[in-house]
Length: 109
Image 1 (cartoon, helix red, strand yellow):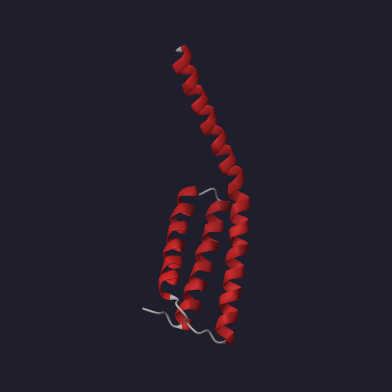
Image 2 (spheres, rainbow, N blue to C red):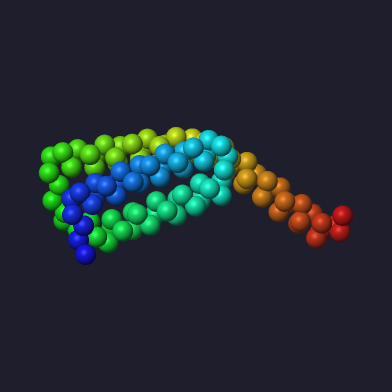
């Protein structure tokens, strides 16, 4: 079912709200909440992908869609800035644990 132009724009604007909440979750180190919100956003993106089709957008709708995409990209950049150090730390911890296990297996320490 093809979405109307208004439905398309509304969905993009809903996704802006979700990405803003994702930024709040990342800022508060609420990683489980961030993951939940990512899944919610992905559901909306999949809905758009499946149903946006060739929805004709008037000038105002097109502008709202472009603004929504720009805001989501800005929030995404801020989220990445917050999550990259955490991901690096997590990776370091995982490598350390893996090294520890190898030492224990090899030397029975």
